[in-house]
Length: 326
Image (tube, rainbow, N blue to C red; front, top):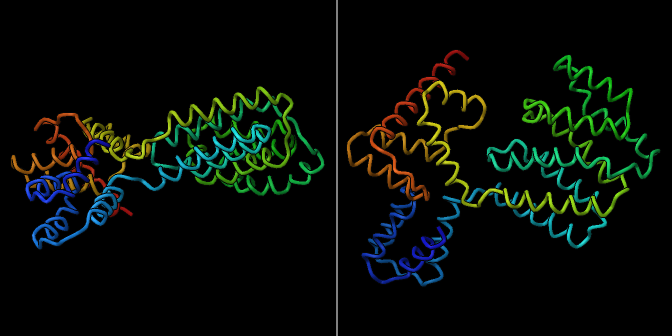
């Protein structure tokens, strides 16, 4: 993709009109009109303005700001950990904060990383102890307020809250993590961000290392794994490919992906749906160009595109039926 961007910038800076025309297909069809207007009017732009225009368009189309923020924060946590390894408990608190605020992300790599951080934290509890038992005890009412609302949801939660209150300790904070990790619904629920705040505050305010070297090393290795698994800034490309592969499955499986949150529609999918609805070889070729614009090299046959279109139609009907029932 970086090669394509370089060529895009190079061609946009060329005075050769044929280069300019060919360059337009590298951008989305939404911006094609604007580029053509510039070309048709023979507007004179200096090199920096053209580059800024192209990069701005590219970022609008391909860069997910939430992914950008997540990656930046993760890198910053790693750099801080390397500079101040002795503050490893603060590093873990920041990792928990990152996990609890991003666990609802639609990006599957971010969700994987969030879950891995919770598992990692659960497994390193034995490397820490309470630094101030009285201060921890005084925080009990605050911690209870972050989970008491759970009693209105299920019997399992009611029993856990009672256990949390009666056996309040560092161990029960660890059990809270396990309670969330072992239940996929709990992990995905927005309300458990409050519960995870208990874990975050415990590490930021109430613990100390009892095995410092091991805690520092294991935390550093964990962050490296998160960085290796972090989403690409061009992850929109990967997500589109994943969605198209889901749409190639039988409709019953597509619905399962919708219900689990693995599939959701967006502007690109709707654009593809509209072009496929037009039928004809020309529209199929346009869809293939759209797909290639997003860096997807998989060759979709006519039958593949027809299957995708059929499933998109079924999904549209399902959404309409659901809205009518509501």
